[in-house]
Image (tube, rainbow, N blue to C red):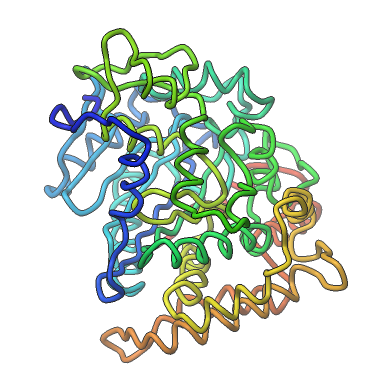
Length: 454
């Protein structure tokens, strides 16, 4: 069933839309961290992406989890089971069947870590029974786009049609890519502005440290993060870097004006999605659409269809990293928590990237996608900047003093990433070396090595 809020109030002015972001402001003591992680799902025998239906299909996977765990509730669109939820977290499907866990809002990364490992154990139990594998990669490596299965969600049918016209790689983004995303709170507009600037300027660094999508369609791409490259040719109206974030204009108003002029995908009404023919939200707010008028629920839905490197809602979403192997999954969220949730560290990180402007970031992002940590920026490599930013993040996590039952603070989730970066490695580098060496260009060897393990 398509979710909508039938009691959502009508919107009469742009000021009301801007107020949505102000209402997201939260006092420091209530800040939380949430992590969303996607992973490609493949047939254990063939390595191919799996369809929605069938004995090894995504629907069967959801049904088995629903039956075994006891804590999930099914979410349906018509007769199709499309998601699971338990009140605190949810499992949803990306267009090509990528399996996404959207975790609860946690007080610490220790909570996120425990949730991640419970989720992995749960999907491995079911996956082993069904003959499925879950891959710690940023892109599905074997099944070409022409054979990629599509999930039966009307939202994705509409988006696929539109994205086939707005960029050459938008349907690849939908059907093949996977990310790990960190969600963070802000205190007020000033705090949100600084975090958004730092997060957006750091996007090439996050790409470089997390690059994990070098092989697609069974072949090397020449990129370390082909996923990041895909986003450069998806839809320029709603993706990439936002120059106004680096201006002095008030952020919440500027983001509102930006979102107003992005074409809408759809409206949710009476359990259905209505296509709106490319009208912008500004046009919808002014004139309505087929006797429907704008509500706050429409605005919240529209905001989920914008894909900049940092997305603003009632919190901030950091969206630049490739999905990771399990032992590195919390590395980039840990880095950003250390920076974002300690004021001195946020200022220090801002100083590192203060002159990284919106006109330069797209080309630096492409260099990061192609060359990873070896990409050069002025007199240094992204490895140099990453080491400095990771040290800032480590200090921030240490100062936050969130300890687990063993007395360890959250720096334990940054340690593996720090080790890899100091050695000049990211997941793609290891995969490329083995691809060119012992794997002999065999994609099934990559799938075997990348599959989640206990």
